[in-house]
Length: 432
Image 1 (cartoon, helix red, strand yellow):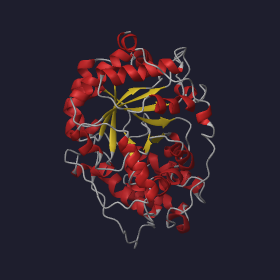
Image 2: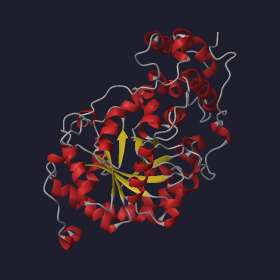
Image 3: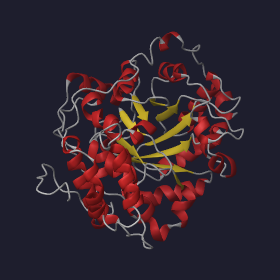
Image 4: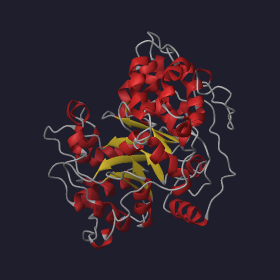
């Protein structure tokens, strides 16, 4: 029996993906309730953002990126972003990194790579590349899809990207090129641009070298927003997973950047695994927080509290039953649309597998899902077969009012650890 039967939705229906491949203006609800803390955070954020008038018009349609979900290859695809937006209305979402060459060489198939439903706003396109002409063309081609920001990847340590691809985090060693790239990207779009980077690469890991990178890129381009993964990257053959674990976190470098570059905006990333920890970073002065795997592995526990705990919005009261009913509409509208049975049930349902983490029935739900992947042809039949494993009490429970636990002291005493103040040697820094 389908557990959605006779259930009345209190929210508007989902726009089928195939009916709107996003090429229309953004939408924004101006009647968003704030509490005092949220007003202060939003005002503080925009005081730190210097945008052209047309950029501000786009950026200010939504609450600022106090909380964003990191771009993650093979994870933050359309399916995940659809689920994430159903859970949180205000978190900023990022695409997977798209190589500029892919966009340029797939001009006849751009909807597959760049299309998304309008419900996903605010959403940021992350691109990577090392050829200026391709970065310019890719940005120009992406304009039709109305992303809210274009982000340039200078932080991925994957050998495929930083090694053979010669971009990603390796570009931190060539800040002059990154400045040129950001100028080219900015010249071909009317939305804000940003850079995501690490705090260093291999032995180039001093605070002054990080500051030189920030100074050069911001001086040579209109870039005013940097997302800082607070670890350095090691390019000596370790895999991306180890690059998220082995290099130590140095949050003091991030907070020193706030001190030394007061005209720029910085988002902190790395090792932050809960809303409690995100709030701890914001309390210490962070302009914004980016969370990666915790938002994917624990979407209900993490994204479910973003709107209330970070943005101060009232609880939506939404339940997982409601979310899955809307996701069913989305899923059945996209199954097989790319041809050759792609995307298939397994691909569309993949982000859902963590929705019942730590709940009664979670293990049985996953086993039933593995079986259903082999023969189900619709999301409706998939849910009919699998949701019998989840108790009604779990499906119908709204997001809890309390916030899950986390390390409230994660940033304790960080301001006592700050490195000495940076002083740019302007000519040497710019033209080195």
